[in-house]
Image 1 (cartoon, rainbow, N blue to C red):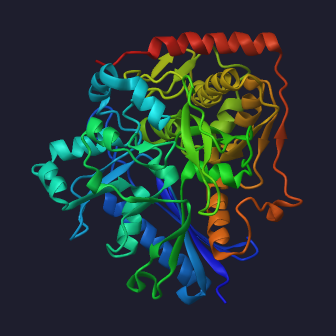
Image 2: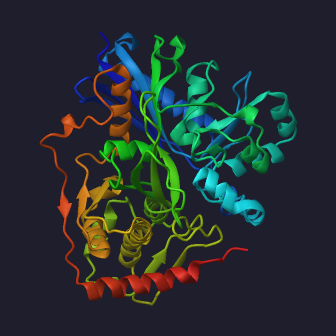
Image 3: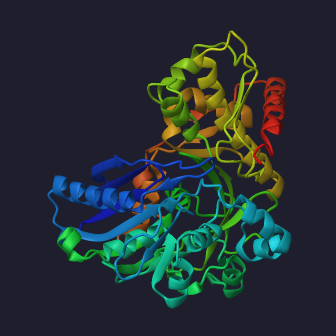
Length: 496
């Protein structure tokens, strides 16, 4: 009997793979980083072969380390960065162009032009906004800028999709071109109510529907991994966009349950049940994870583009940090922020501002400012951007959250978690494991294997994360937030 699932978390800066047994225990885990490329201001790219190579290498490394043959694996589950797109040749499997990453802003002009033509009906059908964040204009850009690509797409020679579909195509040696509903709901091409590709949307965005993958429920059969890769034909049994996977991993499976994941960016999702929210204001409506036997599920989302990436920029771009973890000690070394503010609009601003032309700014610099002030300002910006989204979510839903569930790498920063509780004014409850995305994909994979239900939380019994209670006075909270808001206003509509 197969006792394990292999779980892939293919993210924006790294690929992680775990082998998990039928009791929910991780036996072996491995990860590998890969580079991002920034060929022009506002452009962000990956080499699609890096995504494939790191996935395959980590799958093999975990299998070898555990000494578990592929015949002992019941299923492979995939969680992946969303909106990032790859276009490739159907026959050779070769990518036509680098993967255009979700953070990329090169199609801002196109989105502004399309907004004048039809923003309202697009939002009504997709739950999304006309923003370069999403996949449709990225695919169209590649078809327009690679010689002969649009003609090849019309002939049926090309395939396009989000990272999940790219990995599945390679894992199955080209036998399956499929995606799941959570990833498809992030493209601007899927009708959210029907869960199918919308021909009028495809025509509007100039993306031939024939290049797109077949949409399937998040838990179900997606194809077999070719035996040449793992020595046995392992079934791919679950595919989920990473933020919807974290929603599952945090146990947010009933209306009103809300989580925030801190990664390269931050993503606040609230489960809304079996009906999509048709009027979301400055937020998004998106598909949530469901298996083939369940009705469709939905969530509202606030997407923040740069949070952990701000610390990465201080480390790699400016050389001010040796590691992201160093930021906690630097922040603690100061009694206050010195009225220094960092708005990390390095790739524009997402929810609730939606300004692709915003750019990052540092405000309040004096001769007394040190790298500690910049590190603290970066951490504070994560908390303030999260409050921006939660305020919009509270307004939409008509009530305030009793507490905020959080996960992701930045939850290890206890200074940040306390400051987050202080500026939102509600308790912050850290997940038992920071890897909620991996846990959600694990639950989905185990559900496919028949080990448990998707909403099974029995493996969390007796496990609780740290809870941070707000300690800041209301006056101080609102004063700091007003200063943050003033700084943010100065970043808007900067880029021409």
